[in-house]
Length: 246
Length: 246
Image (cartoon, rainbow over the protein chains, first blue to last red):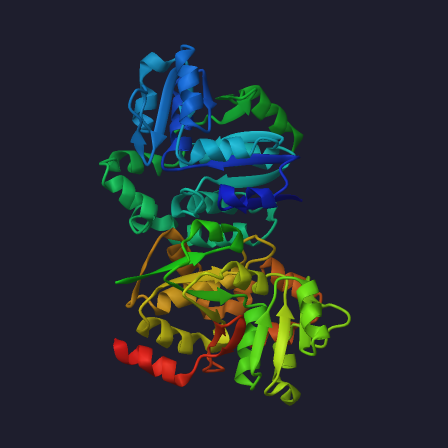
């Protein structure tokens, strides 16, 4: 049976082997929720970069650019870190360079994995289907907050572990810990997260509508996948091929 | 109000400020449970060292020495990593040099804290009393397993957070996550831990009796504290002084 593991912070990533793994990057509030939303609304591709300088470089080369730090948009960039900004019809068919406090760093640290996918509550069922059908062990990489473990990413990891229970066995203790937290919180994740540090950080920024949206399950069926340094839509054909294997 | 935080792995310790903190080191299976047991049974002091070489050095200088890796005693050392070994009356008044896979490393990485205490279920109520009365913020450092987060140390951290709820507020998300896990598991921690990786590692080593003992609450009232590189008994007077402050 294939295995599933959870890396609760990118600072722990050096303890995990990446090769032969399908990695799922999680930054619920809000980077990966934005990525899923953008790709679902027709953004052609997203280039995740670790630093503001790299993001500016792409902007100078004519791309639309999105840069966020501490939950706020950096001056001089086009898009903020709200999923609603990624629904803009003007972004259809475009490529966006993107850097965020935690999420994009988690992606660049995961390079070396066999496959890198983007996960959010917004696309959780599509992910579950794909992960159950494909052949690799799975590592869920929580973006956390500046290296520290956070609640919302851990809860999502726990939800994924729980929903894949019949397909993937726990590789270690972190999946069980995440699942326990999810099972405690699942009746009302929004209420539970009210005690979390990032919820309170974002509350001050007036993005309650964003949080509510980011906690919705199955709004979209798309899965962003990293191909040649860009996040693009995982094609239905790849879905079907991998599904027919099982 | 003072704060409590939880560092889920020594690999994350660089993200936390140590100065002005009272650090509680936790390695339930079995290093800190052994330390509490030893000090409670009259061991005068324990010298925690990170490496087997340092442990051998102390042994050559005439100390009794205990070295464990992968859950097993290293050949050539006197004591294994079972709490029952630390009840031996012959150890009364003696100093023991000690190295373990995770616990002693967590201690050496925490040097720089204002106070370093040793925590286990075995002395949890004594700890709660002391931590509620003293004046520093508290950081619970889970030893984990080779850098990865583990269940038993997280559960203990959660128990401590929960019991100190009225005295210390959460510094971040990790205390809330640990508390959630503890509240889910507390009716039967032994049963819950049956799914954990270290439980299964130790099961193969036939130390079920050790595990059951290490999960007992309040067998002892002592708190080992690090003083001049040695773990010694926190004196009742220090207890009382700090208690009378509040």
